[in-house]
Length: 91
Length: 91
Image (cartoon, rainbow over all chains, first blue to last red; front, side):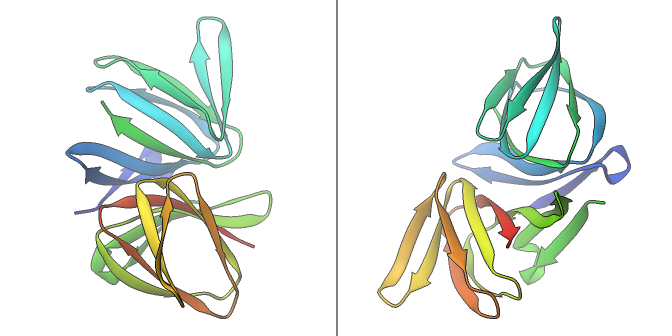
């Protein structure tokens, strides 16, 4: 029922689950910069620490308690200066 | 740096990390009832879904966005009716 996902040599790991028919993951991003492709649109909520997301205007910080959304069939560059935890909902 | 933890035949799984010298985990609890012992005191924050914790007065619900603390060298009974995600800080 729960699924362990490992990316980037273990620097990003998450636990996948499903609730009310919607897929989600709870995960942790170790320090580094990573590119993720998307299939479904995603809503990412930072739940501990801080993530930064690359935008046209440079890196934008998302501290714990904030959320960003990513279009489907696209991708995003994210980086963490310290380990940060997130919840990802597939929309 | 990140550590995958598996409990109760995979029904509870978490990713352990450390930030600012403090140990934390981000994890998911599948439907069921589970007993956790504590060594250090813990602060549990529900970040998706809802957890219930057994108290002298019965089960008490902690929906996403709420937090409960557990004394060290003790333990707690927690249950989930649907999968729920949490961040645990070791204090």
